[in-house]
Picture (cartoon, rainbow, N blue to C red):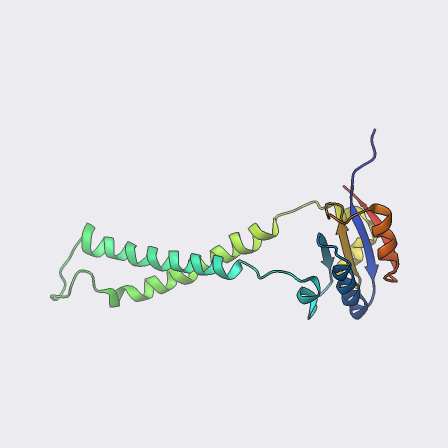
Length: 179
């Protein structure tokens, strides 16, 4: 039976300021394929990790425009093309009366696109297993500890050098993450 492949090396911290400084130093050292785990949202973590702008806003905009277009077209087709009824001499395609449903479908499609494509799709959820779950100490990531994991897919990754680098950041512990 072969040894499981190395996913990366993980360091554990107990203070958020120390953790953010470690993230900054890791990025400054040239590591790019890394992930940070925190029990709560941290101000400045995205800047420290130098994350690119999220595509979620574009996904929501596309969903909202699709919803508005669908809502308007659905009503136009029903009232002007499929089943035209002249009520009080009003035009069959009275766009003013289409506004409430168009608005509702705009909001609905925007919300659904942000949930399914923006959150679940971009985060790769649902994800019942991830290699970091193999580290027993990682259970504290949802309570009171901060973790940074440098993946073995990083161009600069070397198991011994990366471990030595993380130990130099003065963490509580450094752990190998097996696949």
